[in-house]
Length: 178
Image (tube, rainbow, N blue to C red; front, top):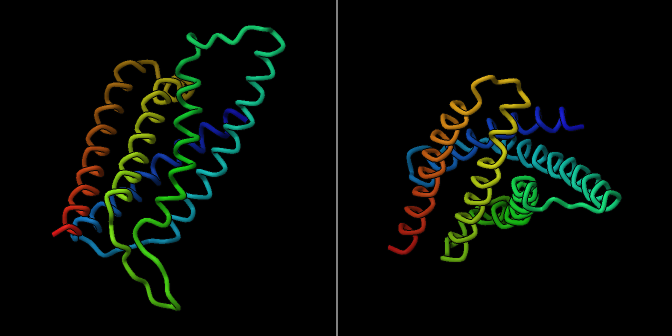
């Protein structure tokens, strides 16, 4: 199960970066390409990844209960993944309904309020935290020998991408206010 969840996570990362890049370019008015099937595929994979994560958490909790040792400090990254993953799943509900609505067969933009902007930035932060604590273990599971160097590379790319996505959300909010 862990192997499949690891593979699923890598696919999700690639699809997320494509989705977020396309969405950011749309928010900035630089593109009008919307590939909804990619969005729904990404959503389905995130839900599957979440379900597998829930099963892994239940198993870990059973093992901890049997042994009587929780090792909360030693497993801080593990629990950070769980809580950030839960935050992602909850914030996805807001993300899906944040930008557009359908009336009949017509699409309309929703007013992009401060609350919607905050929810989108919170989603990005949750994803960043989830990825930041997962990159090292993902690289080790993949068998990367120089995982420390690769972790730094991954974090640099993710930081820059998340910064770009966040700036796009803030600029979109400012445009709604003007």
